[in-house]
Amino acid sequence: MTVVVYDTKPYDREHLATAAHADIDWRFQEFRLNADTASTAEGALAVCAFVNDEIDAPCLERLAEMGVKLIAMRSAGFNNVDLDAAKKAGITVCRVPAYSPNAVAEHAIGLLLTLNRKIHRAYNRVREQNFSLNGLVGFDLAGRTVGVVGTGKIGRIAAQICCGFGMTVLASDTQEDPDWARVNGVRYVRLPELFSESDIITLHAPLLLETYHLIKARTIAQMKRGVTIVNTSRGKLIDTGALIEGLKSGQIGGVALDVYEEEEGVFFEDHSGEVLQDDELARLLSFPNVLVTSHQAFLTEEALNEIARVTAANIRRFAAGEGLLDGTAV
Ligand code: NAD
Image 1 (spheres, protein in one colour):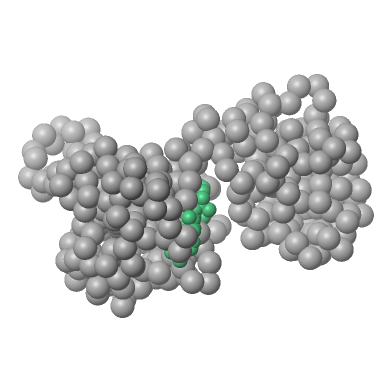
Image 2 (cartoon, rainbow, N blue to C red):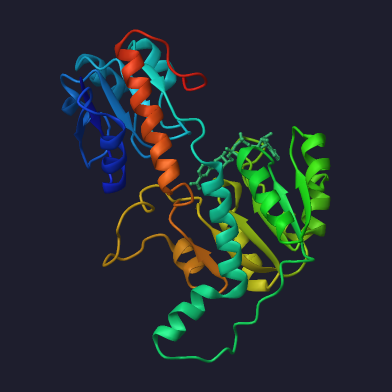
C-alpha cells in the first residue's frame, strides 16, 4: 500500500523506512501538504503529515478526490487539521499522542544547565582559543527552587530530575496528583506563589485558552528578580514582547526556549544566508543570556522510533479494517 509522507526530513525517512517492511510503500516528499500539493497523494490510501502541513478544508477535499482515507499525523498535536472538514470528506485522522516524554524533559534540563553554566558561550570561546573564564559565572542548582508548570507526562520527569539535583520543587497543575507529589517531595502551589518563589520556572502545560501568554508583563512582575525561564512546551505560552522587556530590565536573568511564539515557517528549516524578518526573534538571539533551539526537544532515537512504530502500526491496522491503536484516534 502507498503512503505519501510530506515535509520529510532525513531522520523521518530513516525511522519510517525501518518501521515498515515491504507492506508499506512510503513515497517521501520534502514539500508540505496543502491544497496545492494534495494532488500528489493520488493512488495513496494514507498520507503521513507533520505540524506545519496545512490540512484545511480545500486540502481535505482534494485528498478525498485522490482516494485518501487516512491522515496519520506523526506528531501529538493536530491543531493544523480541520477535523470537521476531515469528517465531511470521510477521512480518518490519527496521531502519536506520546512518544518520549523523557526526550523533552531531558532537553529542558539540558537547556537549563547550558544556560546557567554558560556552556554555549564557553564552547564558542575555547574554539577561538579564548580560555578566559570572565563572565562565565553560573549558580549551583542544588538548593535552588524550581517551579514546574504542568505536571503531566513531561513535567513530572522534569520535576523528578530537578529533585535529583537537590532542588526544591514547586509545581502547579489544574489537575494535581497529590500521591505523586508526596512520593517525590514536590509541593503543589498556586501559580502566583510558584512565580514569586521560584528561581527557575519551566513550562510543561499545553497551549490552551487559559495558558495563552501565561508569561506576560503582569506575571513577570510577580517573579523573583533574575529568574530563569525555560519553555519546551509551546511558544504561545509566552508573550515575547514582555519577555524581551523583562530581559532588558534584568527582571529576567536568563531564558531558554525550544519553542517560540512565531516559530511557524522559521523553525525546522535552514534560513542561513537569508535576512531574518522576525525582529523579536532577532532581538532574542542577540542576548547573551538567551538560548534558543529549534523545536528539537523531541528529537531522540527513542522518540523517532516510537513515532514511526505507532504510525506504521496504525496505517497497517486501518488498511486491514482493524481499529486504530488505543488513544491515537483524533
Ligand atoms: P500532558 O497532557 O501529559 O501534561 C500536560 C499537563 O498540563 C497536564 O497535567 C494538565 O493538567 C496540565 N495543565 C493544563 N492546563 C494547565 C494550566 N492552566 N496550568 C498548569 N497546568 C496545566 O502533556 P505532556 O506530554 O507532558 O506535554 C506537555 C507539553 O509539551 C505539550 O502540550 C506540548 O505542547 C509540549 N511538547 C513539546 C515538544 C517539543 O519537542 N518541544 C514535544 C512534545 C510535547
